[in-house]
Image (tube, helix red, strand yellow):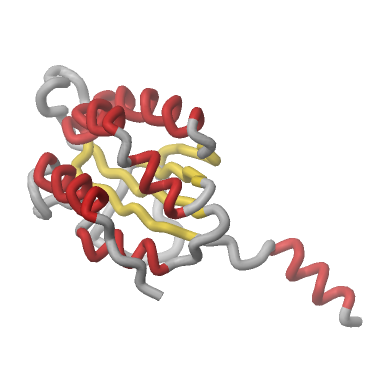
Length: 166
């Protein structure tokens, strides 16, 4: 079922997209992408897989910093905010190498954030504080892939179920 995009959500993401400089180097979702997000399960947590590529040199207001350093300013504030709202940082780290796969895209870092639900994700990132923090995100981020994922089964559980069939 497709849930309609609220006017407030549409405005928040349209403003974020314009502030990010349009769709040239995508660092903000398109309205269709938010609609697709809302097509996923309404109940239960959603893990957002963040694939991040940083600018070599940050833009204003973080001139003199690398893109990664500017994004770090955003990340520190953002993690504190989202965790105070019931989300959690599962893991973050640098990309070292591509082991399987072949793509022209490359990323510098990955972060996994779990939100209580898709609606909570939108509520949390729609808060005016996030727009305030995002000046550092825009200054340092060259490109991002943000992938919504839902747990479908536990790998250990699948093995246990196979063993019990014997």
